[in-house]
Length: 339
Image (cartoon, rainbow, N blue to C red; front, top):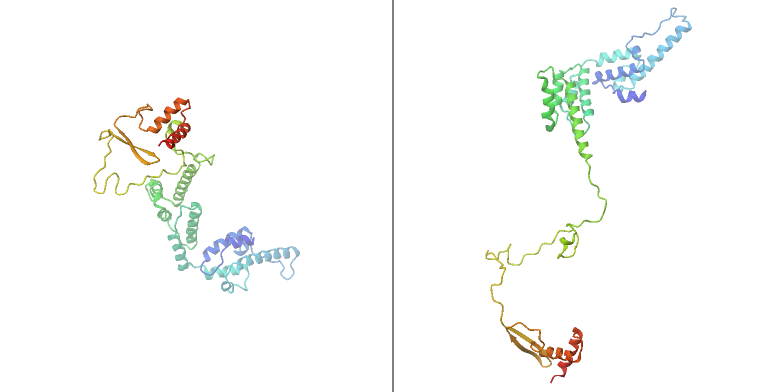
């Protein structure tokens, strides 16, 4: 009981009597105490006040208990300054005195609630229903303060706090009636609730889209690892981007410093050389041997190297296999033995 009273009934400070009255009345009704407060159930009176019978005493005691409980619940939510005005009174008299002192509508209190209503903002990133319920409570508070706004004005205030992305579809739906009487606060709330649910369903549909899950931590090659695609290519070195070749110094994208374009011919522009200079090393030093303009023949006697010709002839005469190792060793012997 105390928890409900603490959560739902505000503390009367003298400026919020209308709100406090509505909440406290609802709470006292839930506890079967309201009929005592508003004098609908009066204290029983004995037929002979000087000598009441047992039944009459029990009825009077029951009413006194109810009045005490009602006064306790009432006093629990009064500020010390307000409590001093009803400190010596019973529950019905205390209620009448509070209503006489603070029951008149306060312009300052009305302004405070009206300002909260005007400054209300709608955040679409949070649940919509609790926010609109809060706005509805502000309107209910103004009504309790005897300020009843037209239903059309309430709907217009709610439409003005919509985000720009919601204005076109929501306002168009609300204005379909074509008359002011057709635009109500209740219909406007329901339109916004439906649009919120539709937007939420779109997000849920996108988040539930099927996606392929990665089942291996092995990195994939950046190209098709088939034999034909790898034929003649360098070995695979990872999936990093290929390094770009540095440009030659002094050129810019195929152009030299003077801005002339560089062209590459697909055939040789000069004739092949007709002579070749052949150099031979022997114990006496470097010797230029032969210059010829004809292709070298496969005959050992007409080759450009005399020592190699002698080595091959000797190997053929003694029947030695003409392997690289044998020819090299035999050529060294012939060269060292030469005068």
